[in-house]
Length: 119
Image (cartoon, rainbow, N blue to C red):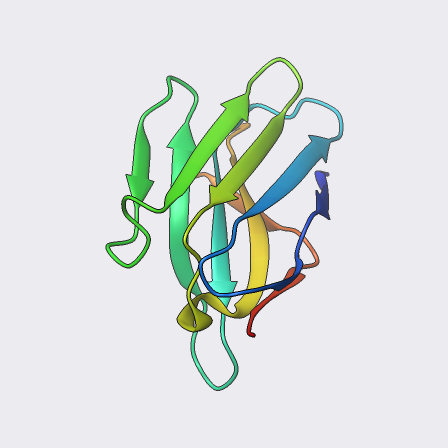
């Protein structure tokens, strides 16, 4: 199994910054991808950013240029730095891990952390 512990989140003023962190633990992690998704009230969960083992990143168009994802493979952690936050960034943010032991990649999710952008 994989356990994910998120930290960060909270209330941020528009234009402000926030950093989310997530640590993965467990035996035989064999993580192939880590990332962040978010879900706003009344909306479906959507991708924010992902990063692979070799550092390839992918961002949602809505956060390009404002958010940066980074990863420490040795520590099995993934961070999300968000700058110039906007009210539409308000959502519950979920840490994501894709793990591959045998066969297809299996998805694991954190419990979620609330980010509210408001004055």
